[in-house]
Amino acid sequence: MERYMLFRFDTYYPSGGMNDFIGSYDTIEAAYANAMRGHTDNYHIYDTVANKIVRTNWDGEYEILV
Image (cartoon, rainbow, N blue to C red):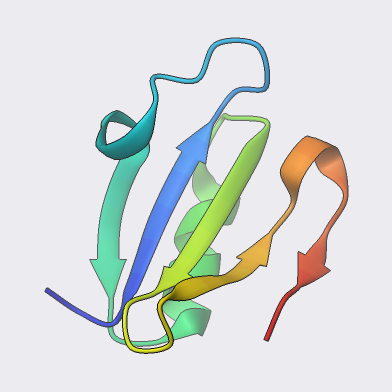
């Protein structure tokens, strides 16, 4: 598994946990590019090394958490 995990979900109908998992990527840029391809409201990019969410647009508010 690569370092960055991408989760995409809709605000009102998330699948929950790993059911929202899209894929893992070597770079945060690759994960972000795939986040923008989706047809969902929100995304989280999780850094498996830092053990935290590093990018999100939860409820439409874009934020970099690094």
